Structure formats: C-alpha cells, structure tokens
Length: 340
Image: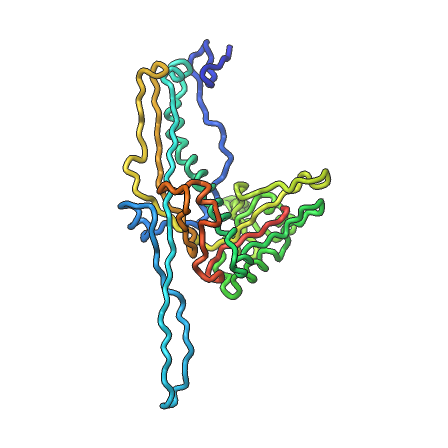
C-alpha cells in the first residue's frame, strides 16, 4: 500500500520507486533569446574582486563648422564623457536530502537536486532580468525615454488587444530611423494568439525528408523574431464583474545585447555539507552565485540607506536607484502593454 514519509511517497512492498522530477513548464526564453550577452570588460573587473564600478564612455561629438574663407577663426568644442555604474549581486540557496529517504524509497534526492540546479538559477536569472527592466522603465524626467513605454491596455470591459501596427509604431516612435536596432519581440502566449488570429504572426517552417512542412516553434512579426514566454509581466486589472478577468500583458521590443552580463568572483560556488548526526544523517548542497546584469545605457546608484555590498531584490527593482545615461534613441529597449 502506498504511503508517504518525510514528504516522499514510498511503497512498503517494493521499497524502491522509479523517481521522476515534476514537469517544469516554466520557460526561460527571454534569458536564452540573445538580449543578454557576456561582457568581457565587466568580467575583467569583477572576476578579481569588488561588486561596483564604472564604465566610462565618450559622448557623441558636437560642434558647428565655420566658413573656410581665410578670415574666420575656427571654434573648438571640447569633447565630453560620462560613465555608467554597474553592480553585482550575490545570492545563496541550499537543499537538503536525508539518507533515510533514499534507504526507504529508493529515491536519489541529491541526484535530483544536482540535475535541477541549472534550471532553478536560469528561472531566477530571468526574473532578475524582468525586474531590472521594470526598474529602468520607471525612470522619469525624460520624455523621450518615457515614450519607450506605451500602455494602451484598458481597465474596462472593452479590452484593447495588440493590433497589426502597434509594434511597428512603437519601434518608429522610439528609435525612428534607427528602429532596425530592435531584433526581438518577447510576448505572452495570449498576445501571440491575438497576432496569430490577425494572421500577422508567421511561424518559421522546415520541410522534412518526407516533404512535410512543420513549424519550428519560432515566429516573426513586423520583421522581428518572436519569443513566446509566459514569464513576461502579467497583471490583473480587477474591478467589476464585467472586467474582473481582464489582464494587462507586457510585450518587450529589444535589441540583441542590450543587457550585459558577467560572473563576479565567487570562491566557493558549490559545496556539500555532511551532517552525520542530524536526522540520522543528511547531505545539504549549498550553491552561491555572484553576477552582474547591466542594462546598457543606464547607471546604478548605490542607495543611501540599507546598502550591504550586495543589492537586495528591492534595491535592484527600485527605479530611484537607476539613471538614464544614453540618449533614448540609442537604446533599443521598449515595452508595449495591452490586454492580450
């Protein structure tokens, strides 16, 4: 008869079970899309020590040419520079497996932990990307940057879903003649369904050896590669009975490499702690990361209070801790908010 012990099922007639991990349907398509790239300059600084630093850059040259007529003095404009500040965060997490669970049920708990760590951290990293994007979109004081967010989502029963021209309009209004810097549209499956129904979202196809065309799971719209990931922000509008199920979906329009990433120094990234006396014996696998996710064109400001040399989630997500550094037209990052 099937029983449970220590949160694990076991069969006391067989004493051994065939263990399978619970299906994990959460995608990390945003993380894998190419919007974040490894930055060797950041790595050269953070792999030795430290968690905060600066990246200097020259500003675009300005000046007014004068008439070359043999009698006009040339005016000189001094070059200008600025800097972006980056920050690394550190996070630790651990999981424990009791010896007795394996002895009783045949489960390989520590093996399951080891095989699942990469996906765990990938999902966490994608959440940090979305949180940091949310923080920089909240920066105020620059109308051109504010225009990189277009919220047409309705809070009433009349839903305003994405239409055929929304993404093209967003790209043109934000980057103008530089709009080809946008490469990817990352959206919720509900938004993708709307575009499918409008017949403007085209799935890439491959013809197999039998001459049958099959969808590749990748799509495009308005010339942008579409990444479908239900991990993008979705918020409930709420309200009366007529709109109680209405939601707002965020679609990102991004260029490749707009996020810079590197690993920071971590002397002991993983270790196993053996506790022979605890619960008749158990192993705990401890994992640690230190990394930097930096939106290119922005600068992180160290908070005046509560700073402990590694930003908390709240500090990373606070718009007040980020500043705009590049001209908005040079930043291929935008978002469109619709009801699907």
